[in-house]
Image 1 (cartoon, rainbow, N blue to C red):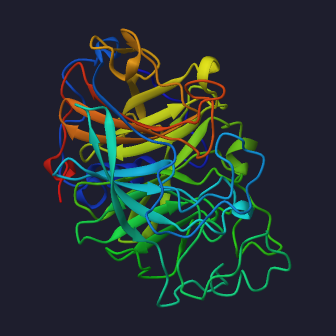
Image 2: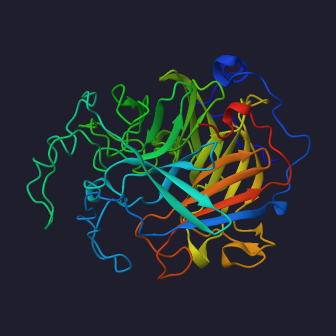
Image 3: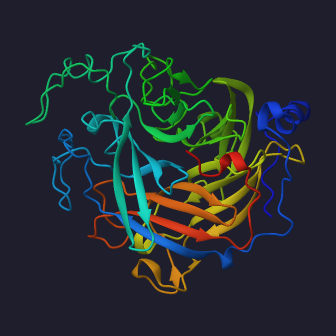
Amino acid sequence: MTKLGILAAATLTAATLTAASLTPHAFGAAVQAKPHTEPDPARATLVGWSALPTQTYVPGSAPSGHWTAGNTAVPAPYPGQPVQGFSATHALADGSFLVMSDNGFGAKANSADFELAVHRVRPDVETGATAYDGLAFRLSDPERHIPWTTWRDGGCGATATLPAGYTCPEPDRVLTGWDFDPESMQVARDGTFWFGEEFGPYLLHTKARGELLEAPIPTPGVMSPSNPTLGSATPNLANSKGYEGMAIAPNGRVLHPMLEGATAEDQAAVLVADLRIYTVVDGAFEEDFLRYRMESPAHALGDFIMINSRQALVIERDNLQGATAVFKRIYLVDLSDADRDGYVEKTLLVDLMDVRNPDRLGGLGETFTFPFFTIEDVEIIDARTIAVMNDNNFPATGGRGPDVPDVNEYLEIRLDQPLKVHPRLLPRG
């Protein structure tokens, strides 16, 4: 068990933590916080593997990638909307998954023609092929909750120079990677969706078909350089360091969005490896937050999900890939903060660079490694099995070879012992 850090000035008081950590208001019904024995990561076993081909496009969709250039693995522009790398997932009871693509091609400037979307995929571990089951929905703002200009409603028309072959679409309030960079997704009890994104960073609340229900919800006291309302203010969070992970409590009302990077204030306080975990109840941020300390300030968050009212899973990773990748891990995290130091506790659950593979799945040896640059999806299948997927950063190469276009791989990993999963967090419709 790794104990994390000392109490920092911005962490929670004991009284606040008691209320936030132990009451149903914050985390739902009480459950046992820790397993009876420590999990053994050396006994995690790969029991299922499949892959979605790199060039999987939404049928009949608009071309994309007009602002990308220089990639020879998959020359741009692309014939449609890539189903792309997955930055969030939600398991369904029938064995399929909702998967959320991020902002497109890595930045606001090159992703204006990438339509923000949630898709449905169906991994088949018997054949090793993941099937694309179609577009679930696109994110949109038909009721004009966004108070600033969006790409497909004024932004494109105001741009002086457009790339060859691209013309501005008709205004339709569909949102693109120029508008937001969604990196996390949760489904509420009422069927609405919450998205955590990085440009603000904001929380986005949508109907079941992706239409915004309200204006983007800003993070109190935190702004990135890409925030559309920044103006003359000074950003205090680096680009692409917003809500990479966002957990939801079993009660379906409480969100825990987690930053991927340290804020400027935390860096100044020499808390460079600390990531903030906020509590949001019915769309309102609470004042205080918990902290997760990474093993290195060079690491990044991959994903963050609750497994019960107190425990969560966190993917922590390095920023390397292929032969240079070293650190890709999943931790079991306890948010109850029993010692009141403001930090969560973490226990190594799975080392994704050292997974038992007795059946040699994925065409690899008896030790399976998952050396992708960005591993951004973890989900519960049952108490003993988790699913893990990578974001392939289409059209990137390097995970399985320097010149090999990355695919979206799906893993099913059997754990050494069962997790204490709340029934409401198991796959459902």
